[in-house]
Amino acid sequence: MRLISATANPDKFVEILGLLPKQVELVPRPEDIPDVAEDAEDLLGNARLKARAIMKATGQPAIADDTGLEVDALNGAPGIHSARFAGGSATYQENIVKLLEALTDIPTQDRTARFRTVALIAWPDGSETIAHGVVEGKIMKDPVGKLGFGYDSIFLPNEGLGKTFGEMNNEEKSRISHRGRALRSLINKLEFGP
Image 1: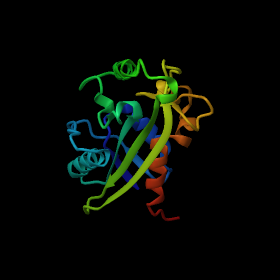
Image 2: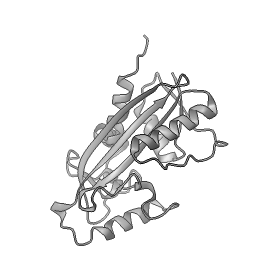
Image 3: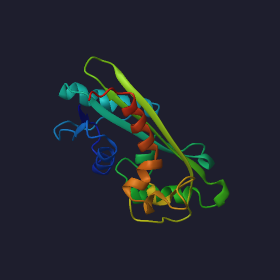
Image 4: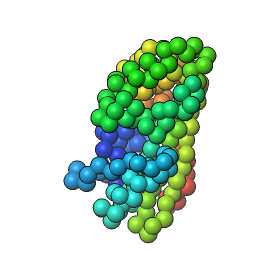
């Protein structure tokens, strides 16, 4: 099975590639396809916008995901705005700094948060395959670890044996991560022949 990746984020592409079984050939998004405006009201809507746009542009099945970091002390923010929390072209570091500043006066026990992912395949016949993944944890007061990307260095998953995502290698992270769970669920919905 051949799927076109809707992501333009090279870090996310590598992570998704590592999560898919060998029966799936993941093809990078063609460079001539412009960015898709992610202006839906929720993660599902954004994943759908991206997957459908790439599927229509290529005529082939496309896979997209949208992920949000939901911090309870911030009423679920940054949520769908996670990638652009500090502005439209914000770096990972700028987003982390803004989030940590927003939580300055919040004690550790009240820094509960979760990563939520919606993964979606848009098929040329108009149908979709959708799956969800969530991982609970908390936000650290300072970054720990240099692996991963995005908010990984400040997210301490409840199931991570005391390691942030930024301290975990890809295999460790994928085992419990929101994206890992969403993509395994998505793949389980597909039928592969022998």
